[in-house]
Length: 420
Image (cartoon, rainbow, N blue to C red; front, side, top):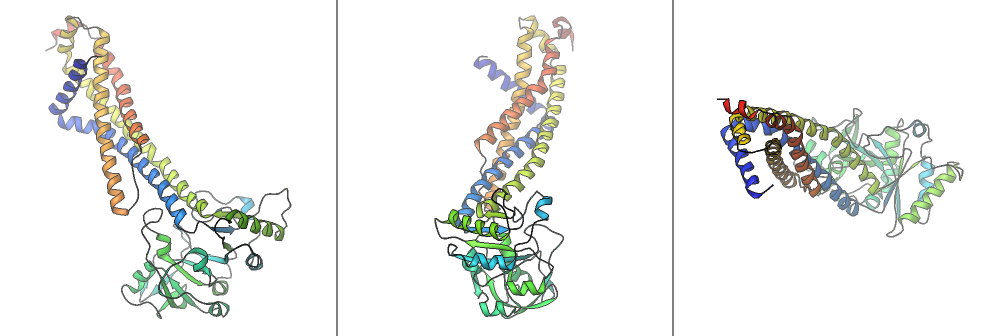
């Protein structure tokens, strides 16, 4: 395949596009959309991996969560029957862990609400306004030191308030904006599930450096004393034990707590843990699973778009064969072989879809850039996505061009030249 042959093919493709702009545009739409989606999905997955690493490193990498179930936070997997039958982590378990010498800080956590979308949403109101999807966490007074909770206004509750089961709350900045707007929230009253709470603190605004561009959970969280949550939500038996280990001793502390809980829960040496152990990086792994699940949905859509684009390309190539029948006959009469005609039409189809792939990758790059700028997410289209998108688009052209190319190659030269 010499340079002139390649040049002629490009010329034929561009002449066809310019002569039939609307038809060519509609034909390439499927290929463009498919390759753009491939590029964008690759950018999201790559950005997620980078963001997870950054957030894990920044947000309490020394924190370990001990739970009844294997996982904490959002998950695509439902708890198994064995997990549902496990004993809850009790308040006595929490106090026993707190008495160990190895942890730096320990706090229980009782959760009312959901880390992700849920029908079981607590109701928080103030000033005739309702907060969106609040997450209520009952914790000890040392929780800011356990999980690195920054306070912007007011203060966190103290031990006496916790032990006296006072109804005081520290609210996220998003909650404050929703129900108090620009007003001072300290000293004001909010109603959580029908009970009055006095606001004593407001969390700092999110840094915008969460897993998906903002620390959305930090915006909607509300901290109340653990004993208060026990009193108000006696039906919520599940507790989480949050442990912060000294630097460089996470594995040691984790092992100490595991051994203690196994002993207290009567787990024999031959049996696996009947509780979950979640480090910060494991929690962020759940986000990877969610995005991967979305990828399973999005990728078939991209493939469907490429399939539609392939049907369009086959159609336009069949039309091209019909329009250029006389030209094909003249070429055959001048010595061109069936193989020459076959290669020419296949090359044209592959060049056409390859051009659509280039446009689609460019669109994906622009979308990834917009995503990066608008939501501060490190979306970068990886090389593998660019290569995969281009190869997929060229492959579509090859498959879609086979039948029109074979049909063109089999034309009888004499009959073809007689075609007006």
